[in-house]
Image 1 (cartoon, rainbow, N blue to C red):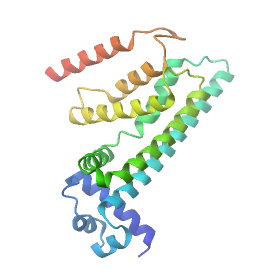
Image 2: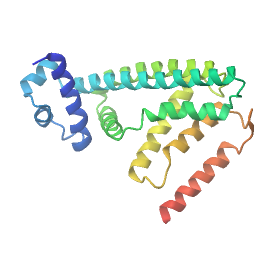
Image 3: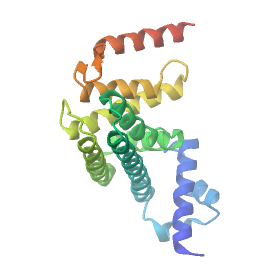
Image 4: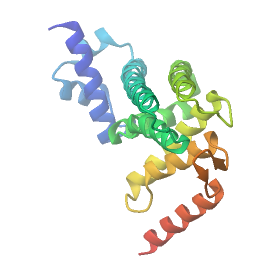
Length: 231
């Protein structure tokens, strides 16, 4: 059997198994059964399930950062053509597009379940969380580079450093995705993502005209969510 193929099958099996059973019940045996291989083959690839997850996180992060980068490069290119044609680029619409590009790659249900399961494991067991935390920091820096380049190319002026923008945006996005998965009708992940990014990028009165403050808009969103939850 091709080693790279076995490696990928084990990673795919890990996503499906942990998403379905949770980390606690995702033992090597059911994971191998789903992958069509044996525990011996698993241990030839990974020393532990924790090692498998770090490899999985690296793969998922690589693919998602690359997808965010492609989306933002297309956005910058499109906005550049519009500017060249004399079409004004509205800051609010540019920020919404950046938020959508980042959020779209972080909203997958299975990956949210798997990454949340392992984050909880790392919190409960710091002895196994060190490598995971190191990889998370590496990924954070990659996203900061991608978003920072796009923000600069779009001519957006940040209200906070790009490092904090990305960190806050991703943390809040994870919470919003969890709520939207639990109660899809109560919260719009896309709308709340945009609110967060607008608050951290745009001033209260943007170039395209006065807007309600972030607090006002969040208040409306929360009121709508409460109404939906009661109905």
